Image (cartoon, rainbow, N blue to C red; front, side, top):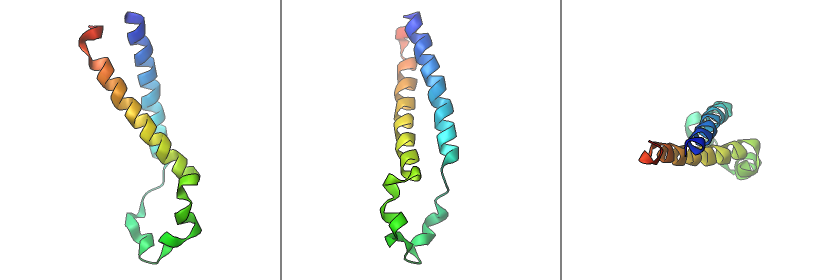
Length: 80
């Protein structure tokens, strides 16, 4: 069980570093000012999910879920 705990802690540390880097790579949300000028209907607004920003958002969600799951598993008393 000790080996499993060490492996999970290494994965957890890598996840923390990757999550921090991906969050810092994302652009700010500009507080919704683009919708005032009608910019929400532009090509960029419609295809945002396929862009680099969309990929960063998806990977942030995945890494955040992995972070929560690993934190819960490592906090269990099984490894004590």
